[in-house]
Image 1 (cartoon, helix red, strand yellow):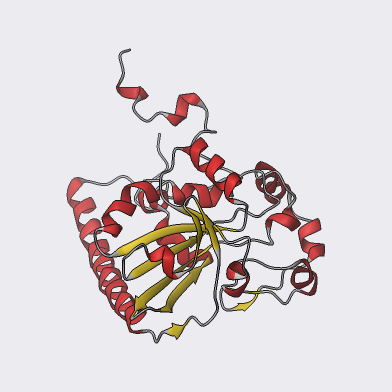
Image 2 (cartoon, helix red, strand yellow):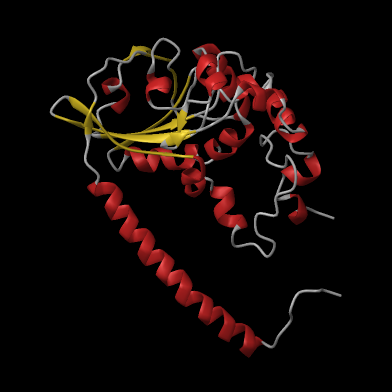
Length: 266
C-alpha cells in the first residue's frame, strides 16, 4: 500500500492547476533570465589559443566553422585520465541530436578537454558520439576559463570556480569520501587529479573577424544541459539519486540499459 497521498481525480486536477501557476511563473522568469544572458556585455578575446582537432591545429576562430556563434562544453577529461568524467559523459549523450539543429541555427557546438586528441577520439568512438571534440592541451584555454587548475592552486585553495574561490585543497582531495574516490577511479585516476579539471560551458560570438566571450556557466548552472535531469524532475520520484548512480551509457547492466526491452516479445 502506498504511503503517498492518494486523492480523487478532481482533487488531483485542482492541485495540478495550482502547480501550473508556479510552473508558468518559472517559465516567464526563465525567459527573462535568458534575455539578461543575451544582454551581457562582451569581452574581446586577445589571446591566441591552439586546439588539436581531427582536421589539424585550429584557432578559437576556426572552431566557429563558418558560423557566427560558438558554444563550448568544457568536458572533464584531463591528460592523466583514462576515460572521461561519467557525469560529463551523461551530458554529452545529448550533443549528437542537437548539434545539427544548432549548426543550422548559426551555432557551432564543440566539446573541449585537455586530454590528448587520441584519447578523446578513442573515447568518442567507444560511446558512439559524432560531435566535434578538440584538445586544448597545447594552450592555456582551460586554465583561462577556470575549468582547469594547477596542483599549486589546489594546494593553496585559491582556485576560482563558478566565480568564487573554490576552497578545495589537496588535503580534502586526499580524504575524499568513498563515492568520490569511486567516481575518480572510473576515469582511471585519483580524486585529487580528477578535481584539477572542472565542468562548464562557454559561449562566443565572431564579428568582423573578432572573437568575443559572451557567457559561461558552471556547476549547477549546467543542470539545464542534462536532458536526463529534465525528465527525472518530472518523474514521480524525481532525481532519486543514491550513491554513484550516474554511469556511462555503455556501463549500465543489460537488463536496465535497453529501454525498449519491455516492449519485446515475452
